[in-house]
Image (cartoon, rainbow, N blue to C red; front, side, top):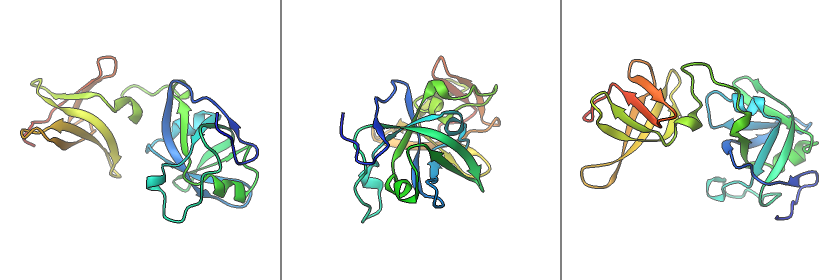
Length: 199
């Protein structure tokens, strides 16, 4: 395993069922707390897991002038507390004692084991479970595969990728609301929608 450059962080193996759920954005206060940018509008997975696994930032997404990552490979954080604060997630960890240590983690990618997610309520789904599902309409016409989800404020939108008539990848967006979504079959890896190919 790679050497860890920030004291207190220990190298770890990424769990086989690990899911990337967010990234650390910046320090918050002076006592080692940090802000988290969640990949989901509902960050319950961050709140429920007491062990987060970090990987270095994706350098291509970091602002120019950002310093080197304080670790390489995968490290584990033992979370003391994670909570909502004015619409954003903030957290503290045993291995992050002060603002300097929190700033050093800026941009780190956060993973948690899928097995630690709380059970979703009926008709509620984790975004990560929807990615990769095939989407068909009521007539059985394939509309594409879910590549990502976007939160537009009042609703979530499925972003599908399909092969266009010219053979090139094309994107399609369908609101993930009951007016258009008939069923979500997670075991069958399929979503059925009331949506026509020419919409």
